[in-house]
Image (cartoon, rainbow, N blue to C red; front, top):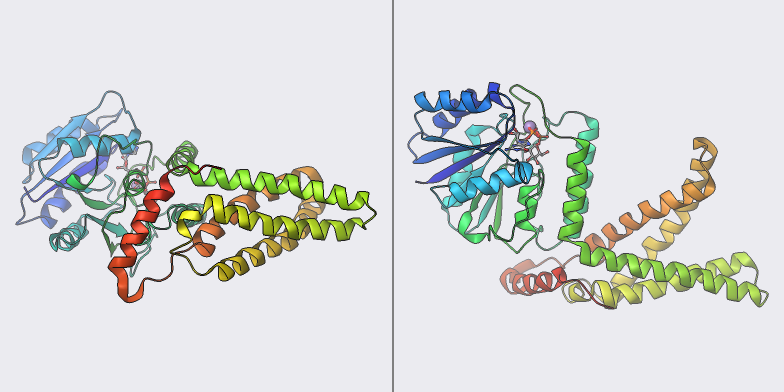
Length: 381
Ligand code: GDD
Ligand code: MN
């Protein structure tokens, strides 16, 4: 067997036959099987059984009574059952064109990578099948945030949210995966450093039926992100909390000795910004310093960002209060929360970004892998 094609399905009855037909045509001349891992509540299992009879490729159906782990859980179950170690995962609604499969297989056959990712965001790839502008924005923002949270592991991956990829099952530890919801590739990639290659693809329109994406799936995704990378971000929050308290104390102390309150606020802000930088250097991003740019360059970026943030945030609060009829306290709280995430993204993506590896890729890479290994451990103050 050259490849096992794993297709998670939830009420995809009108798409099954077409998928098997196009995948079979694309896989002509290769030894392949198609495994549907199905959680449907409609007649999808019957349709799959019917298609099995006339299919040129072996088609298997795993129907689950309990949809544990949702889409991700189904994929892991399919990988366990696969004949081949090469497991190709794709959706059952034809948004992932089966005609791309040979390209993924050929890339994989070069044997220099563990995972081949079909990406919407590289080369000629597109995401035009995303339902509307909101989903495009959600996809772009969540991809950026995710990459920022795993700057080393996702360095070579432009589309960690794709559900179209080929993986050598032997390189992943299926037992340690905690599949939850839609983003199974991220779950895999976040665990260790893989050798990844990408091929571009057009994320097309659904053949038939409806998307199962939902607000709840979005919440699952956020919980997954937090669980995978909670250590660093929570520390970053703790340091931010210290900074806020320090800020208040400095303003209080200075005004108590008669300093003008605006002067006091400015001094407090600058002292806190510098203090925060020192704290995150030592407690949050300490394991990424060595691969990042020099300390003065890091400081300059951090300092500039925090000052810009302070300057920009105040007029935004004013705007929210004057145009949105919300209280100044609420507007301040909202902007502080947003600023926290933006600050975290900026620091892990820009301030502590690994220097470009250049000619010494493998040596630098080894160091980076080790550093990221460390970065996964929750930090301690
Ligand atoms: N077995 C199983 N169980 N399959 C499921 C479940 C579930 O609970 N939920 C969804 N699926 C199947 C669908 O039947 C479909 O084949 C595939 O998973 C993707 O679901 P869609 O409903 O088509 O969602 P989408 O188009 O919004 O999501 C796709 O695009 C994302 C990128 O934006 C998927 O490819 C995601 O994996 C991908 O991340
Ligand atoms: Mn879809």
